[in-house]
Image (cartoon, rainbow, N blue to C red; front, top):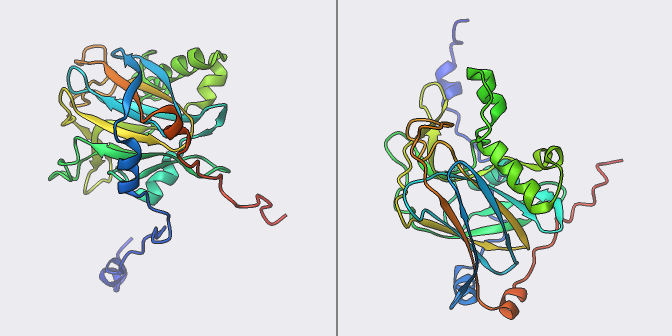
Length: 280
């Protein structure tokens, strides 16, 4: 159809932010820094290439995710310890903080809980910003590579997609059946992944991660967490999303604690106060 006479005027209408966050409680960086001062490692898990592992992260401790050997993208799921139904809500996190997470952004849990699960408190890649293609790091856009889409687009079964990796790791960590674990695996924080949307088609793109050996992000656990991380079979995702030929490296998850007593004193955010009556 031909454009209406006022097409340019319609396109020129200014956008409105869907979720203004002026009233959203902001983390206090000084309080967080004081709380974490002197934090020492209390646990570590190395995630093999093209596989996933889980680690428990007590409230008030720090989860550090790093590249110990080289550039590697990771897909992160978060669950509330003791209640797997409360898990990371990438879509609402994206609506509140944008497509990519920066220091100060929080990872929110799903309905009906909708509370901060973790706060991003440090990022060695914060220098990257936005590149000429519109790419940024640490996105909450992509769902995770999965064997269903792989089969749909190319045929064949591939079992080392992040969805399958996360399913195996969650099943092993919680001692639950694979079908139960798969139903709980959810959209991810793409750690170290560099992504954006093409300007014309609006297609989701990836490019080689700028991460290098030693790069890391730090997440403060706002509640007791089970963190499950997959080392993506795409490696740095510069050429392939799921591949047995891409160069892949391990990832590392470390838990750092300021001491059990100080960690336990970190205030736990309450679940959302909505009464859940839904007008009935």
